[in-house]
Length: 154
Image (cartoon, rainbow, N blue to C red; front, side, top):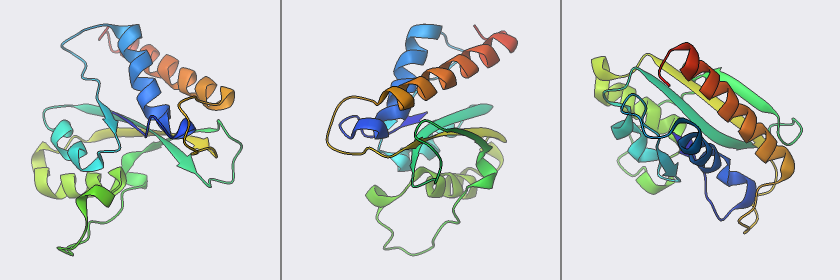
């Protein structure tokens, strides 16, 4: 699942990674590739029926250089669900959506969820990625492809 706004420069890195993975792995029933855009709430519906989930998104204000790649288990960054009925679904981020999914899906919630985050600064209205962020995205694609090959999924 790749997240990001394709017209906000480096914020589009998750979408870019999904596009590159589609080219690298082709069409296979064993793998689902989701361009999530900015629709975090839909995350919980995409999780059901999958054993392993990999999320890719940008992170801003990380204090690390642009293009720095972080890989963490989703459990490390889940945001607790808020039981406030006024929580706006369009304003929800994927980390909070994962918490809701865990609560809603219960036993159907996948245990193996990894998150790749790429440090960015530029979220201006623009359709291009910076060189550093694109390079980090290409690294994520290569890491995922190698993992899929080891699992004999491609």
